[in-house]
Length: 489
Image (cartoon, rainbow, N blue to C red):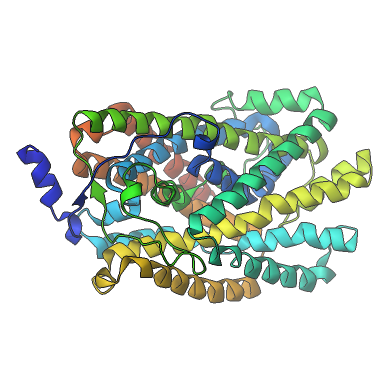
C-alpha cells in the first residue's frame, strides 16, 4: 500500500471514524437472478403515486408534449444513482454517511438533509391508495360524503405497511420481494391493457413526447404540477439516495463487509457495522472493481431506467386515451382512469384497473416507510457517538425506534392532511431542491474521499451538474409562479 492510500484509510473525514480495510468480493456473473437488485426494487417504488397522480394529471391536461420532462429527469437520476452507488461499492457506507464525512461536519449536513426530506415524510400514498379501494367497495366514484371511509382505509393501509418490515432476516429482502412482485403484476397488466385498448395515436404521442425536448403546451402552464412531474419521474428527492443504502444491504461491493439492517423477527444473527470498509484497488481488486461498475450500469440502464420509462409511459397512455381534457383533482386519478376505461369497454375493467391502481399505490407505502426509517437509521447509526459503542446486531433497535415515531407521525398526518395532491406538489418541489444539492455534494464526496481509481469520469460529474440545474430550475419556475399568484390575490 502506498502512502496516499494509507493516509486515506487513516483519515478522519468529517469527524467520523476512519474506514476499516477489506477485500472487494468478485461481482456476480450475468444472469436473471443477478439482475434482481436495487434497480428492480426501486422500479417497484418508482411506479407509484407519481405516475398515477402527476402522470395522469399532466397528460390529461397537456397531452404527451411534456413527456420529455420525465425522460430528462430519469436520465439525470440514472447519473445520480450511479454516483451514489459508486461510493457505496467502494466504502460499504450509504451516501448520506459520506455526506456527513465532509466539512463542516455531521451536525450541519444532518440539518440540511433533514429539511430536504420533510416533503417525503407525509404519508400521502396511503391516502391515495385508499381511493381505488373505496371505489371498489362502493361500486362508484367516492364523493365528499365518503371522506370518512377514505380516511379510515388510509389508516388501515398505512398501518399494514409496517407488518412485512418486521419479518424476513434482512429488511431489504422483504422490500425486494414485495417490489419485484409489484413490478411484474403492474407492468404486465398495463402493457396488456394498453396494447388492447389504447389507440396508436396515444402511443405515438406519448413516446414521441420523450424526444421533444424543450416543447411546451400552448395552454397556460401550471409549473407546480410540472415540477412535481419531474420529481416523481423515477424516484425523486432524497429517495434516490436509497440506491446506496440498498447496495449495502444487498451485499454488493464492499457492502458485503459491513452487514445490513436486521429485521425484528429472524434477523438477530445479522449485524451492521458503524463504519465502512474499503479495498486497495490494485491487481485483481481493480479487475473486480471494474466488474462491479459494469454491474451497476446494467442495473441502472437496463432495469431501473427502462422500467421507469415504461412505468411513466403506460399509465400516461391510459390517461391520454380516457381522461384527455378531464380536470383530475385531488387523489382520484386511479379511480378516474378505471371509470373511463369501464365506460368504454365494460364493467370488468372497473375492478381490474382499480386493483392495478391499488397495487401501484399500496405497496409503495411499504417502501416509503422503509425508506424514511432506513435513511435516518443509517445516519444516526454512523454519526451518533452514543450509538457507536452499540453492538452491530442491535442496529434493529434504532430502525424500529424510528419506525415507531414515524408510525405515530403518519397517523397524525393522515388525520390532518388536506388534499394529498397539494402536499405531493409541495413535497416534490422541496425534493427537487434536495436532489440538486445532494447531486453537487456527491461530486465533492466522490472526488474528495475516493482514490483516483475509484473516482467517476468527468462526464458523470457534468451530468450531475446538469441534474442540479434542471431540478433547481423547474422548481424555481414553480415557486416564482406561486409567488406571483399570491401577490395577485
